[in-house]
Length: 155
Image (cartoon, rainbow, N blue to C red; front, side, top):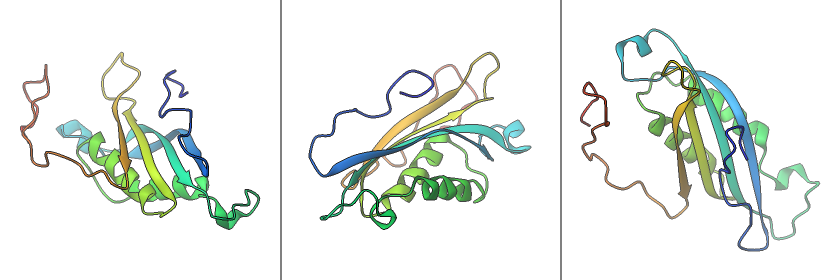
């Protein structure tokens, strides 16, 4: 469970030879947002990662080379934060998922991204996505309207 009290991914593993690795509540300064004031500087973003990983054929949990390194995941996320301004938490989550899935051992990535200072009086706002090796984002280019926000972009 995350600090928000909801699991990122199912606890049970469906097949033997798989395990989960996770990173919880990583806080990173990120240049993110669509509004003018969000271009003034970075915002605090909380990132949670849950990965379903395939074990090596002759798996030895004590051999560093056979496991997905959570420190490498954290370092990779921090590097992504330096890639320049992005507009949406959806973009952020997708880039983190792509990074994680670039390791052939990672079969599934569930990523939760939350902006911590976006709306006064709200602990966080954000999204959670799950990507697998087989999944592709659908409806690219679809027009979107954010309910309750007359100034939202339309694409």
